[in-house]
Image 1 (cartoon, helix red, strand yellow):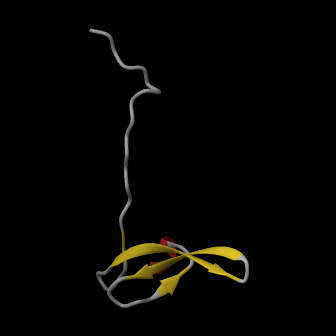
Image 2 (cartoon, rainbow, N blue to C red; image 1 turned 45 degrees about the horizontal axis):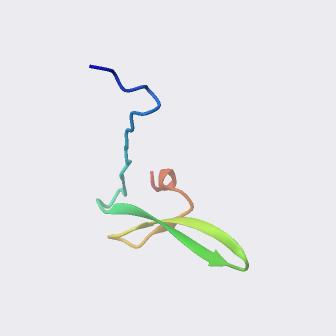
Length: 56
């Protein structure tokens, strides 16, 4: 049986981030002043940061 090429194989991995309060961090995209902004928000404590690594 033929092997699938390395480019044909698909792997999907999603990374989940958690806040120090125990809530899960979700990424949100906002459109303000003609610019697209990405924000990370904790579902539990509603804390907002620029990226998930800022919650540490």
